[in-house]
Length: 147
Image 1: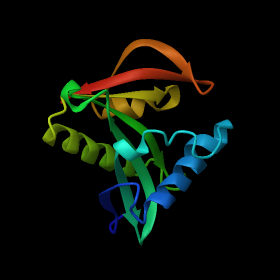
Image 2: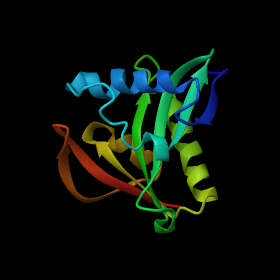
Image 3: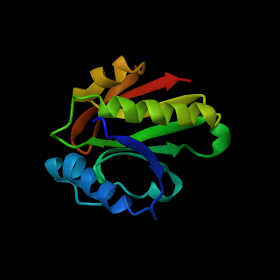
Image 4: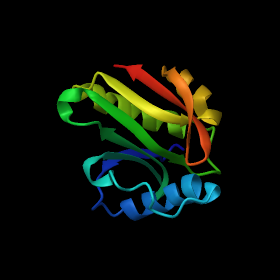
């Protein structure tokens, strides 16, 4: 992880296909969702990726909600290579996303966290709000952090 670098990319970047593949592999295929099913907001979102030895190892998407005056954005599609989970890569990605959001005038970041990763987001300062809900057949929690 000493050689890891975090980049912000768009959908025309040469790392974007690797981001798509990682999201499909980690998030969608294990729960039976079709590849590319959650890319409908990719063009208007900000993508943060972790690169190590020229290979994409993690990603997260930040989507402004409604319009920029809302000052709220959504963290979504967080994926870390299964061999590297628990080593701090996800934390670094979220830190970078939160710095970007704050610098760009956002006041709050929300996410739909799968129930099994609520603790990860809590350690980063997010808090659960509202009732648990089911999305793509999995129990999720609404979470948010004020910037």
